[in-house]
Image (cartoon, rainbow, N blue to C red; front, side):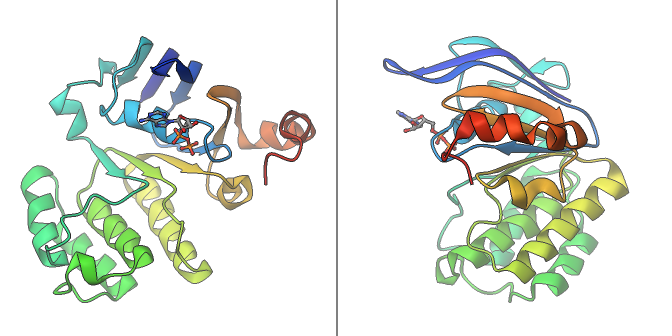
Length: 230
Ligand code: ADP
């Protein structure tokens, strides 16, 4: 579903991504893990077509992502920093999503509203950061994308809300084989939800494993990270 080969990205002289490979299978939940500054957001911005690689390839469903509108409409993206139009109400944002995602599902929108219990007439700029993340989830899940790319999605959420968010993601994958990529600086947080994990460090993909193999390699990971990894 997602295939990245030998990806390099420079910001001026600084090599932010160094020969990164990534393979995500359809219907899987993939955890992209690494400390702050390891390159997760930069990699994600290639997967969502925001950045163009300096070398290597980035494909989704066998097609190059950059400047590919068709592929972009299949991806639901929850960015690290929210891009919502601040003056919009949630309801207004929902209309906007409806107009760009052809598979928008109104029943789902109503069902998730019951889970998060946020008034849809509230303006985005009047919501806390955690609530904005919930709204982002709410709208993305209602858009029924084939792939969901979630950059640090649970930052700022309390434990109960985190569980609600994970349950929604797991349910969605079970129901319709969505493919999900989630980034986090905390491996523990993703352990119970992901089936595959890629660990990034200083712009490199250090290890890519399914979760069972990863557990048996955990000692190696601790040595690699020393005190750099939670
Ligand atoms: P992460 O998401 O893992 O915290 P990032 O992908 O945001 O890491 O950043 C990786 C590295 O690239 C960091 O050292 C960061 O300072 C640098 N970086 C990210 N974006 C830019 C940019 N637009 N210009 C220059 N350096 C950047």
